[in-house]
Image (tube, rainbow, N blue to C red; front, side):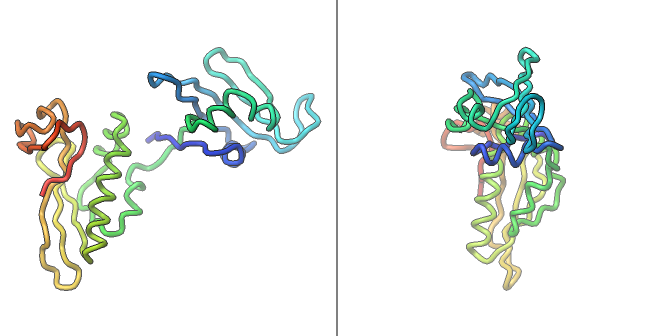
Length: 205
């Protein structure tokens, strides 16, 4: 699955775009328009440059190629995009690896479909924030939350169990709302209500 990582600095770009591993990246422009590029970084002299630290940039919009020193890259639209926080690289990840950090979740279902759906609809951050909230509440109460498949599309149920006495503390759902259920109006297929129109996941208890 392809997701995105923000390039925070020129140094980070050097680390990611090594001579052996070029990266596919983009400047995020207005209206979600992307200016896509392929970049590699060379710490030895290449071409007619005698200096080290050369970035080779292939601009996919027109196929043009540039060889830029660190200073030239800092002064380019790439450097400007990094400073403004709108320069991103594509990264390939295993969908289920995103769940590794949630130590208080016991996932009993295959989350691949939900994660890939969230990534396609640009709602992955929101999904992970919801899972983090369930995880944090479990940690703070000395509990484990078991996650299992719900009957509603792209939704999950959870049961929070106290670690010490194994008693059930709470049951609830992480329900996906959108146009298909009137944005949480209580209609099928979720039969769940939200106080405000919701496009994404919501915790119900």
